[in-house]
Length: 220
Length: 390
Image 1: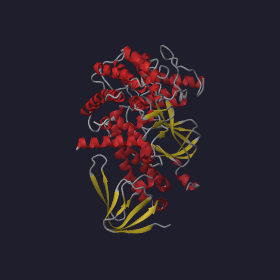
Image 2: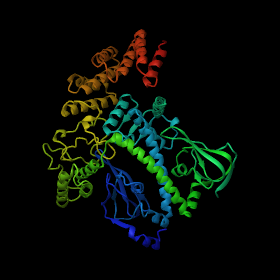
Image 3: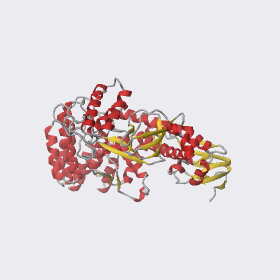
Image 4: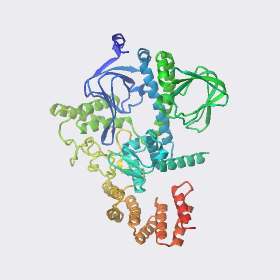
């Protein structure tokens, strides 16, 4: 795909970054997305006092693609890990990219499929009105991503922090810590520095579905 | 294996909601409806597929369960593509993908917006503050080039923002550090911070999630928030990427007058330390900690919380009479305690363990009148009543 001819066609979209350079920063508005051609890019979020690496992207991967949708604040920071060459596009010229790189279109299609599902799932969490149910539902969402049958297990371990959970539940980390500490005192959850253990994931599943039914009945 | 044409009789189901399938379909002839519940309104939606249209694309490509049931309304022929077959087809037909991308990006934009609306209500997070904090974080970690980027972007977008004077000063400082010490090196504390120098937060220095790291228990809280990373930021626990930018003292979202922040942080810190002891099953030590907090009355909220935890510790220690006494005090002192019902349940348990079924029955029965059937405690109380033969 990336023969000399195609590349030269895209020369005008090419941008380069030095090692360690910030490509864009969380919270910054942006309308550009990038296709990496050379070098690696670190995607990071700052949560509380910790910089969390969300992903390390390789050549031929895309980032900043949410900019196609709207000029929303960036949800993470992108930093060049090596000297990076990338193609930079925006909403106006991205059809040109797709024609030159149809495999990018497929990549985007997959990315969007996953994103839509994830957003719908998070929407379900956010519409719960009980904050404990929200937190429990975040654990269920994380459990659903594991290739296991939840009905067959009890205890589940998550490599997540309180701040991660707060992020998904749409509550403040302080509030989230309080809820999780409450679960700890109820002995439903164990909190470790590097992971969180849910003692009985099916207990959480029952709890959330009860809350959801209760809420629906009140609405009706 | 080539894509296969499959015939379906009217009334049959191509896939059910919840199925895991790896096929993308195209309707060749006939009539197919996608049935699902709208996630917002809960209403049943029937979406008719036109001939020549694809369906089942998102769940197959994203590898998650089907979100709708595909019902055949008239005898139909569909072609099923495995994902690699679909990819091969799509690579030769960019127009089809671009059309799909537009549909998907519209769907994504819609759901994304709804999620953001819900998040903003809860989070109160402003990009302006967020960007500022990113700069502060990197400066504190001596990642000067990153700090400079964030600060400079801040000035581009918010030239007269809340933090712009501070940011301008920080840019000078950061540039000075960068040339004097170099990336990753430099003084431990930010010399601009007034009062007691506090340690510079460093990535991974202390996991922010440790149970005992109380949100409000930061030293340097009283130095104000103008000098970021040196003087521990007041809302560091609540800051960062996704978090709400709320003052740390407001961890419970309660309004009204509060104890002075210093007292609050001490009480909160002690409380969460003790909670951590409970989770390690060190009930005796935890009890003593809670007793101190409950007795100090510096912070009414943590005193009442601690009173409850004292009772629980005594229960786990098997000291039933002391447990009953402690919870009785709680009921008298805090008649509106949020954990009142749980307290009554523990009292019921104690009486049951002591063999006093009549009293146990009284307490369990009382709980049933206080909570709705949806409350897990309702089930627990009813189960307990059953087990003592009431």
